[in-house]
Amino acid sequence: MVYRVYTPEVLDVPADFSIELAIPVQDYPQSNPDGTRPVATLKINASTIKFALSSLLQINEGDHFIDLVAFTLLNDDNFVEIIKADVDAFGVLLKELHEEFLSFTLSTKDEEGNFLEATLTAPSGYIAYRTFMALTSEKKLAGLATSFMPIDHDAEDDYDDYDD
Image (cartoon, rainbow, N blue to C red; front, side):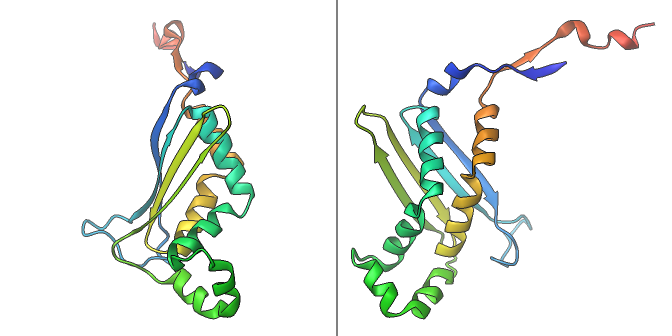
């Protein structure tokens, strides 16, 4: 039998990983030349996996990522006023597809020196936002934390029932 061993200290190591999500055809109809679906990628670099996961959850629960998308697309500190002035134009800009994927990078640091740098690449701001929200939901992050737990293998259970 194979099972995961809950060992919280494995989350205290530096984080350097990526998670991907295939982009739905209704959001981005163009497939890769080999017929596979393009993916949006969230690249994580952080002081620890635990800090990365907790920070991503906090960012997911607020409006921080949509603010980052707006700032990146508009390239202006006054993005709130620009959006209020022409919401429809921003909606078009948000959904505009780019063959060369856009990068949205956020970073944070706490008073103890823990840090997170996360970069999401996607073909539009809209897809970037939806991908970020999907990849950083509480359920997804809990599954990701579990995936870092070590696997144990109970050799005594292997094939015992099949020996005759």
